[in-house]
Every structure is written in structure tokens, then in C-alpha cells.
Image (cartoon, rainbow, N blue to C red; front, top):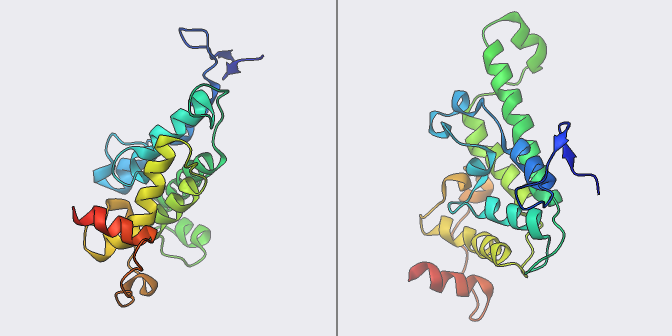
Length: 197
């Protein structure tokens, strides 16, 4: 098996190939983040897309090292995680670039009339990338269960005011009236009980 990345051997100290981990590290790199939000200083894309417990990085690294098997298997880069990381990397860089051009004629030429206000990254872009990155969580893995529990409970967490940082959507769809109580035994009722503990 070829085990090379960026022209060098990508085997770790145990001789195992770390190409998947290297790819994820590269996709998580975004040195311009601090220019977009001072709270993102010393953070990478995994940190930005986390719902609060580093669960995305844990899941991605588990799949990268062992695959979708609970014990040992061949590692892979999960397509959803890679897509979410790359999407955020691209869009955040685009916002960064356009905000560097702001105020000059180049901004008007490139922006197509859109304002590219940095607040939109927190309001819309983060949540869209979270949806992409988390959509393939596999419940047979403990790290996948953690993600699925957080996602299933997210509407409830928002409703009672414990909103995670990445879940700050403020559009009309999410300001709708409080939904009716969940039916007993449903996943939502289970989450509601856990949130109230």
C-alpha cells in the first residue's frame, strides 16, 4: 500500500498509515479564522463546527484510524466530515478575502452586490457546515452516538435556552412558536428528560 502525503511517508511511529488523519488536519486548518472572529483565535475548523464537546473531531479521528468498525478496521476519511470542513474552509476564506477587499472598487467587482458581513458566518454559515459535517454520523460508534444525541436534542436545547455556540440561527423558521409537547417514549421526550436533569 502506498502511504504518502505531500511527498513524504505518512506512517506513524507504529508503522500505521496516517494519511486519513493528515487529510483531516489539512481540512481543519484555517489560519484566517481569528480575522473573522476574535473568539476563534488558536482554533481550527473542528473547533468552530463543534457543538460543544469536540465530538466531531473525536468521531472523525475514530473513523480515520479504525473505520466504521467499533474495534479495529481500516481507516477512512468520512465524506460528511470532510465536506463540512472543506465547505467551511472555502466559505470562511471567501468572507475573509472579500472583507480584505471591502472599501475598494475590487470589492464591488468581486462581490456581485452581496455585503458579505462577517456576522453572517456565525448566523448562517457555521450551522450550514455543521449540518453537512454531521449528516453521516454512524450510531454503531460511541462517538457517532454522542453526535446523534446532541443533534436530536438540539431543537429542545434551543427551546429551553441552552443553545450551543454553533447553533445560533436567528431566522424566521427557528423563531416559530413553541412546539407541542413530545409524545411519551419519543426520542424528543427522552432528550427533554435528559436536558432537565
